[in-house]
Length: 358
Image (cartoon, rainbow, N blue to C red; front, top):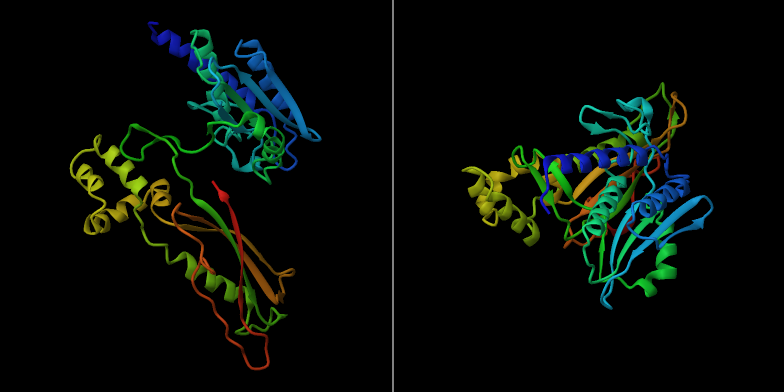
């Protein structure tokens, strides 16, 4: 089939329109309320002739889960293409355009979920539509899956697995991860394929101290102790580590780079080369995350009145560990206990909350 620029412009316009409409469904989780979005996806799959085998379930009140099936010619295990319907909260005051407007402006579709992961659902939908219209023959079945509650507990996917995992028993699941990024290595778009996942490792750090009045500072202030601890953690980034997977990615990218970047990327296995290139590589937040365990301060809790020194303070750290790494008893690697005469001791409590691989 000979494709023209006009053909691709039609596809692009369709993708923009679909993306704009999809993000207008406010599926902020909590509460989610993904049913309307799931029903809309069902209508799209049916009206576009992709498949007539579409079911919308309601695993929880108001929360839609869609399963669509395209048959295969052989008795092979299916490919599941999955994305989630829910999104995290968005403060409209921080957005150029309202987060659920679906505004099309400045070369972008604006809206919460355009990246995580309603765009993935649109890509799956359009790719399947194109294949079906072109008469593609599927050797194995394809299951189009859209689940609720990915952002706050994964109850939708848990419900689906408990009831249908044995029946569907997929050979592969294509889910979120990687994507196209411009400006990482030059102006061209880098399309990454996720083949391994970092581990989620969340830590709560608690500091205890002496309460008191804000007009009389003292040296056992829990909030001050906590701030010093957090600063110590964040000011000492985890060391750069090159895995076999990332080394292979850098070698592949090197072919499209100019000297000396190409030379450096091809030889990152050499400790000296890695030391020379580390500063430039880790300056990019995406590449930095590929090369080391990361620690982000995401939550702070302390105090209840401006003129009262609180007796405790908490911080929550979102840590992401490289695939081969394993959590130790303390992700930050240090603790501090210093009793003060006549006062409560300063102490840090680490509550490990290892998460699933993501």
